Image (tube, rainbow, N blue to C red; front, side):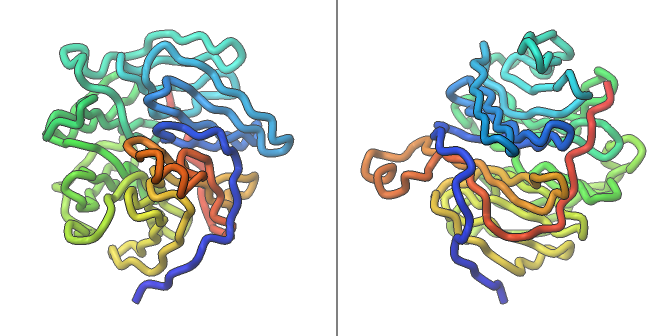
Length: 295
């Protein structure tokens, strides 16, 4: 049985993104970073001071991985770039799909080994037009093909298990992973089948106990699953399209989630003013920080 909780959190940032995605927390600067993909923006929020900045980007981007205090790796519609934190300058790092200009990056996350998994999809969300790639040391390897909307890329704390979904199919997949390289070493299996439920499996993170926290797009909730795929709790949020959660704070004991107003008409947006905001659930969690990407 799933325990259901009403929203008791707050709005961390009410800058309403068309498609908020890819939240990442930097413990060194106590900063939350996330993207407005369709608006070509990178958002920055300093938690200690509530100072907010919006950094315009020349391309659509969706995933940020920390490299060190001064550099970030970001995934974009034109490949992977190293971003200088101080200046915002982008330096090309690696190509993803130079032969597919109709595609863009979507969900992704750094594996404990320091490798990155990054998904791509059609800008028009065409069926099976995307893939998931493994990136390490500048080498890009395709690991899963024929994916329409890649999401929920995350890993067990010890790096032995990887998760992902195609949100169009709505099955959360589980695959064994080499903890030293971040490469799959087995065939994916279905962990959660929610094809017949409202909403879609979107972005996910895994906490220190191996439980999966998933933003369910279209359902206005964040679900928590145990490692066996049993949904044990559901947390409502005041936006019907939550997109991805992230552990934040110096102890990784708070949970934030990005949201979106993409596709909502005026009535729907008026009914949910938090659509597109960065929200905090208002619960205590036992999270972990995203690993550093190793160049």
